[in-house]
Image (tube, rainbow, N blue to C red):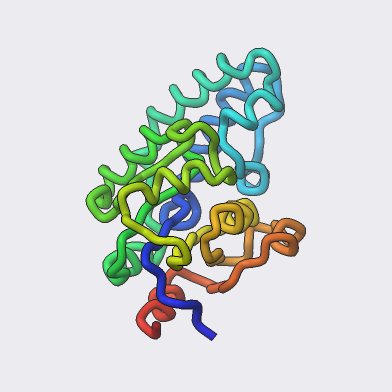
Length: 214
């Protein structure tokens, strides 16, 4: 059974619409090396990168987290646009959806907007909200409220949130959005049991087909 047609669609960014894991991993490892920590494999990066940097770096680096943050961002900004790639089906999906769209990501807001502009996608989105833009980051509802500001939505309007992780589904539930999961949930089975998606699709192409069937 298809979900109700929404008034707006919100998206996660990394691993939902784009692939920038190479730059993320390289920047994380630059920070980890600087403080004598073991580097992460790509698989470990996929598994551990969920929450925003301002939440996770104090846990990893303690009182030195702000210096580690500076190292991370210096490395990331040097490479992220060079290795940024759109995921299969992303461009077609964005061209197909005919309601307002926005992004709520835990990537730093200015970097998210730089990537969207680089891809020529910035004008497609009503808002591009990243980490640090709202008082709290995803999964808190605050960035969702910011993303939907100005859309003239009403109580009870259906809003989708499309993501690839259990944290995305948790965020959708907290923001009263319909949680749409693309892929297998990145191994977040325990979180998905508590915050189940309303719809699971294997790919963005399948989500495009679902949209056309609404």
